[in-house]
Length: 233
Figure 1 (cartoon, rainbow, N blue to C red):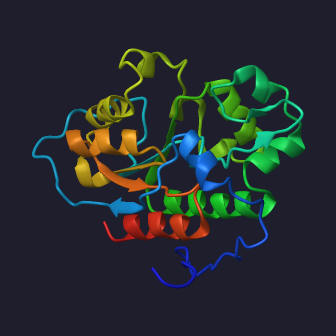
Figure 2: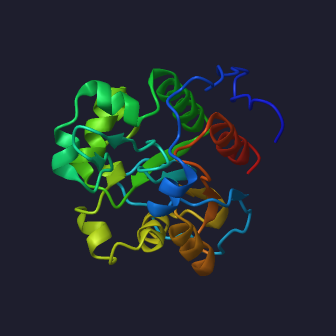
């Protein structure tokens, strides 16, 4: 995709040039960040639709987002001598708001994420986070970034969430549970993650369409691609 993507509604977000630098390739490999960008938003439909639960809305489509390395851009915190990732709950609780903003790539990148989430909601998508980080650590970031309203408590699944624990921390299995409960078919759901392991498991099981984040965190180009994939479904 050439040039800067345009979000639905004609808004062309500002460039991310000048935002906090991404981690090096060697560091990314150490943290198991995926390096192979790939999008596959299919149109295969299921022939049966399970009953939708009464306590859930009737959004026709869904985007499931990873957190660390997808919504966040994890930084190494020198004073703590460790990476600011959400499976380190105590570390995240000790971060300043300034450090939380840095972990999101800065104010400009967080605004681009807000634009993406707003666009996806306008397209009729329910938004979920499924992560191996702790739920409270994830919510701390969302609160500071001002994005909590896009992800109600029932839409954030961390490693301490019973639904993920019951499925042995396999994200594809949790997504399949959501799809069965909501009557979503393969082409109704897009899973976005930076881990090739998680993406490959979804692909192997033919759970849903997938989009791989190639760098440390969604870039402006990635955000546009995700929105475009859903517009074309």
